[in-house]
Image 1 (cartoon, rainbow over the protein chains, first blue to last red):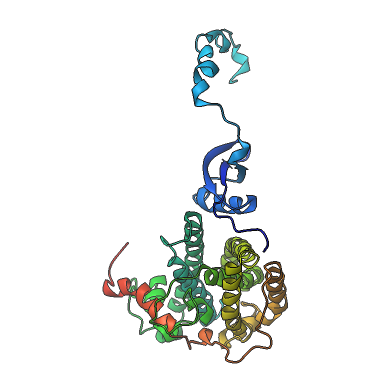
Image 2: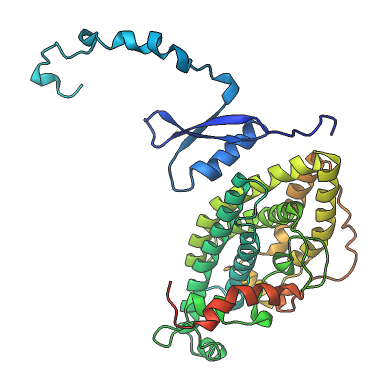
Length: 98
Length: 280
């Protein structure tokens, strides 16, 4: 009972895996006092309609995001490099779906 | 083999009345996530109640002397037969077999018509005390000789395990939290624990069910329940003041209720009674 009460709960990002074998997908965020708390709330908020079989919660502060301002230098240079798409190969029929 | 009708109604009424109580938080939760959590909890409980009422209704409809006993309930019948809604919406206070604990309002002791702000500590403390019991009850009832009841138990066990985790977690946060949250959690525990004594004084239907193997010998769960409760209370730095038990033992499960149940039922049943043929 020594630590002062949190006035503001930190923000958490929630990732839900919808099916075994699929990846966890970001589905939203919530405020919670700690990781266990966040997990429990994520269960109640984001998996009520059978959306998931597994949940990750990550402190939002642990995510380093690209700057909206650097969008031009980050992403535009890729726009004219269509040879980076694997569309110039003939895929043999036998290979099936890749 | 079927469990005694009053045993099924006891289990169903416990779930329905607590589900209805907890539903009061819908739209009023302390935070959005808890609002949803409590609504989930209520829907789980009302879902359990529905299965139990359906089972009870079948039993009534297939037994002439039971059909006679419930003949005065005319609402929500289908082709003259009792339905889950007949049992939920058309029985009166004294016919309900839930523990008194389930019907108490979400605040400290006040007369039935008094209005006070709901205290989330009371909500959480009750959910914790009840869930600790129901985890043990449903676990044992999976072996009930009433196969349908055993199936309901298996489904309900998963739900109530989560309820226990949710309520236990919050109780620890409250108890081991700030000065105010500790005080309110302790008051809630002091208010509600004495009502739990009724768990260990089974009515005739519970004893009959324990005898014929369709129910649980509730006294065999007592030690385990105490251990569950004591462990969490210790972690929450909360104290038990209910031993030795101070006096009156609540008797809701035999049909003698507090003044609060009538108000709860009036609200819950009014729509079905005002529009008996309504469908939704």
